[in-house]
Image 1 (cartoon, one colour):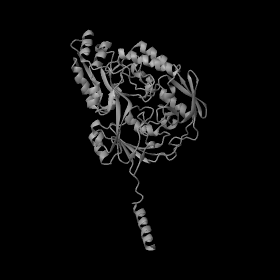
Image 2: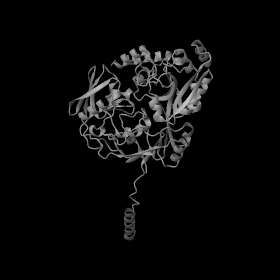
Image 3: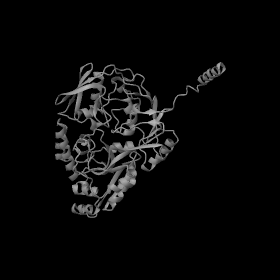
Image 4: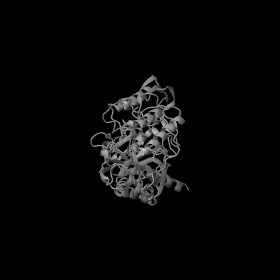
Length: 495
């Protein structure tokens, strides 16, 4: 018996010396289809970039499992008056580089993103925020331009950055936050690597390291998932779902649409834009292209349960005969030519959906030429206001509503909105009033009025409420969030 124990101990010793017993588990790998544009959490907006930045940075407020706003880096908050919100911060929190998180850092963070000189993709997230000032070491006030009922929602998306590090030119490629994971390196064109923050102020995650790997080709993604080389694919193709070791398909806060440039002569008449909505068979699109992983949206970028959802609105019916009649009434009996812009590889079935739409528009006389763009170029060009030269005629995209609130759409539908190509003063008045109304029931009613107006004066072809289809490896245990954020700290993975 002693001999057996002796041999066992010796074997363990040899394994330890050779490194066999000390072999670390491989990092968790998450596949995305496009290269991040930046890792600066205050600049970035697209989900593929947020997979990394969302695990590095944190906000004063956050979303709970059911979408409710909850305190996070702030212990509490309240409205002091119509234009001031006060936040009391958690103590003993540090950024990854050791800088203290306090009111000074929080004020810097708010003022940095709201500074007009700072170029952020998140302009729609900070509408009506004027700036911040410290009250004491762990208390700050955030000021708004008039009453702003959505300020708490906005603060779930406004991440905190360290004052010293954020002033460095390389902050977008070497980010520093307070979150559960720290940046390690960014191999351009391949992957971003992150490791656990050993000094995290909350319970440390069980997954010690993960990589966000850029794999543009869907077939390569599913092959790597099947081989166990990656653990999570964010946008599995519908036809690939049953090929994955495991998949989860869930209705998301993503709404696909074709944005109109209503300033363009051919699209100025609301009858034309209604006609284009009637020309698209959205039910067939959902059934065929997405194999049921999606449904025609109710002609609004909202779903039941979101603030402002108008239950009276339904998808525009598929009625090409009526579409041709409206085009004739608007002075286009023979249709017209137009350009439909779409990004390459960013949205699930995005290019194919654009082709489907173009084919159906052709049936009512609209000749839509498809022009594809690399993602970062598309994002920049797509923001050119409708009145300016080179603004897109038609723009395919998905609008995420992780706010669960109709105010999320303000930048797309108001005259001076950063992504708007429509101007209707009545809509502007309603949106302004809603944003300044603290009573939730009154706000809800105002937003419903906005969407009723947009049903008669549409800013887009309203397509689908998209399901997100996640492909998972056998070793990954994870339940996706309602707001589409990918939080690795909530994941578990076996060896």
